[in-house]
Length: 177
Ligand code: GDP
Ligand code: MG
Image (cartoon, rainbow, N blue to C red; front, side, top):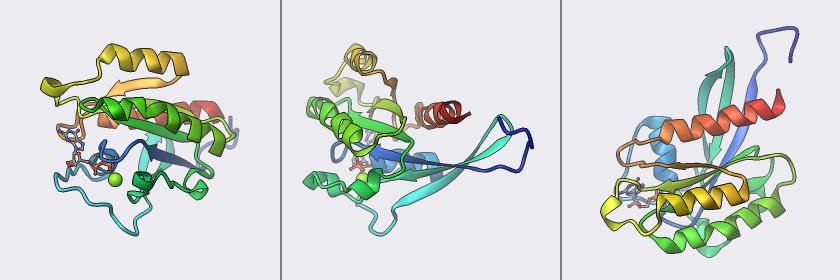
């Protein structure tokens, strides 16, 4: 702990990863701007958004990185991962294939990043209960097996979006303090 107290600032880089169209960009826009976009396009040129969160009376800047759609080509660059201390690894509960893709994303995260990284498995689109293809139990057990936090979210109706980011930010904070 810092004995000088106050004044210090924290900047945490957090990356969003997962297959195309699982809702990464909308999770970020919901968290950072409380917005949802049904007509999703990759936002060209915007690499990250910064959100200020207070933890234990300290100001924490969460710099959250979103892909510009390059995951479609399996070409997320090492610069994207560099310096990341947190990750939300996202699948879509209504598309099994995106859940099956999680292992590959976790491997990529491991090879690209050697520091301690707070990782959360996120099953997004939990509002689509009627066309669910991945059960809550499947999500939970993968998370347990891989040592990840787990949460189902909906960027559409806001369920757990704030909480998911805050748990990751809190865990990063715990890792360093
Ligand atoms: P990305 O490619 O992972 O960044 O995914 P996007 O954020 O671009 O979202 C892909 C599509 O899924 C868009 O049509 C979004 O409107 C939709 N979408 C994103 N999040 C949700 C959600 O929580 N629920 C529902 N029903 N649709 C979502
Ligand atoms: Mg996107």
